[in-house]
Image (cartoon, rainbow, N blue to C red):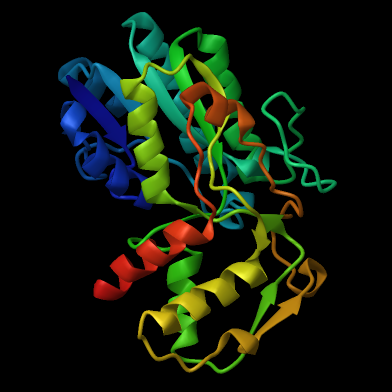
Length: 290
C-alpha cells in the first residue's frame, strides 16, 4: 500500500514515517518535490503517485504570523485538506487529518467534547476549523484527530525552546493561565497507526495524553526531568515564574481552556492514554541524546 504523508519534514510527519512504515510504502515528498501551497502541483502529484491512504500532517502552524498571512494559512489549513478529501472521496480512500484545540473558544474549565460548538479566536483556529468541516462535508472515509500543544525530540517546539533557554538563563517568565495538555508527536503517530490497523470508525476524535497543565507547569516539568536525566542547566524549576496571559500579549488571541475530553477515542480503541508527563521523560531522553 502506498501511503502519502504530507508534512513529512515536520515533527508529526517525521514520527508518522517511522510508525507507518510497517503498514506500507510511505511517500513523504519534500517541499522541493511537492509545493503544497500550489493546488495544481498537488493534483498532479496525486494523479502520478496514486496513494492508497492519505495522512495529512501538513499545516500552517505559525499562529501569530497567520494573522499577517491569512491566505497562506487558509491554503494549507483549509484548502489543502479539502483537496485531499475530494481526492479520497473520488478514489474511495481513507484520509487521516490532524486538527487543533484552537478551534474552540477557550472559555470555561470543562474539557471540550467532540460535539461542542467550535468558536475559534484567531486566524489559525478559523482555518483549521474550515479544514475539518471541508473533510466532513466531502463524504470521504476520514479520521480527524484534534490535539493540543504538540512537541517532539525533533523540530521547533516549546520543549526545544525551553531546553535552549534553560541553558542560557537563570529565570524565565512563562504563562500559567492557559491550560491544556502537552502532546508528543510520537503518541499521535502511534495512535494513528493503531487506529488504521483496527479500522477505527470514521469521525472526529480528540487525541492527547491524560492530565492537564499550563505552559508554566510544562516548563517546570521539562527542567525537572532534564536535570534528573543528568543535563546541567542554568535554571532550576523554581526559576520559572508564573505570569498571566495579559502580561504576555501576542498578535493572535490564545484560548485559556484547551482541555480535551478523551473518552470517545479511549472507548473506541479500548485504550488508556498515558499521563502527559510519562512520554515527556522519554521524549526528553531522545532529544538529549541528539
